[in-house]
Amino acid sequence: MYADHVRSVMEPLSETDRRKLDETDDRRFYDSPRYVTHADDAFLDRLTDLYADVFEPGDRVFDAMGSWVSHFPETQLGRVVGHGLNEAELRANDRYDEWFVQDLNGEQTLPLADDAFDAVCCALSVQYLQRPEAVFAEFDRVRAPGGVVVVSFSNRMFPTKAIRAWREAPMDGRAALVADYLRAGDMGVTERITEVQSAGDPFYALVGGQASSDAER
Image (cartoon, rainbow, N blue to C red; front, side):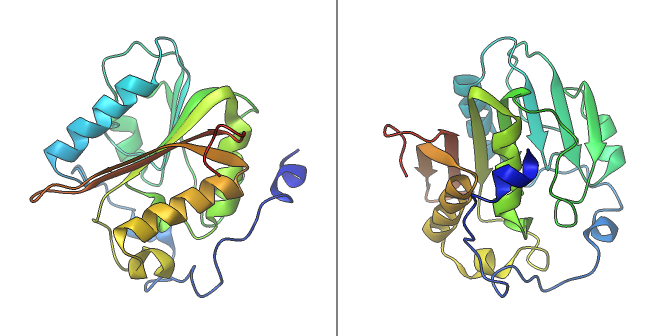
């Protein structure tokens, strides 16, 4: 099913767009745990509020490219699966029922069943994906009918590991990239959030879901 699904995906990036300044193995870069947050408190509080609006009690959630904390609300969730590149960070996350380590730049196919999750989350990490069209196709595959994909980001990054298209784009251009990724995954954009304050980290998020005439294409 995966091969059939990915054949319909467009190619939003050129090979030059996908390049990183540091092309060494990502697993080495993330080999040591970083028990820090990658945005300020205001951003993280806003992210928790967004998740609270999106999640329903009992929802099954996949937290892609996660770490030691997910910034989820107190909502009682069902099965929560985490993914990342550092085993120690994933093990420390008390919201995960289970987790796995996988380099999505090396292997995009997720070891997860079709239609398994009501929400797929990707926070503060989308800038590192070199094959986002294939990854987002997988997000759509594991997303249950009626489920959502929530992608959030700010202006922070590890610049040597972010792809060129992301590094060179302004913030609104980065939002446009994420919208392209969702469309490449055969999803529509159902909500865009842009909150920029005079101080602090800007908050950007896109919510994707089933492509339809009601969704932004």
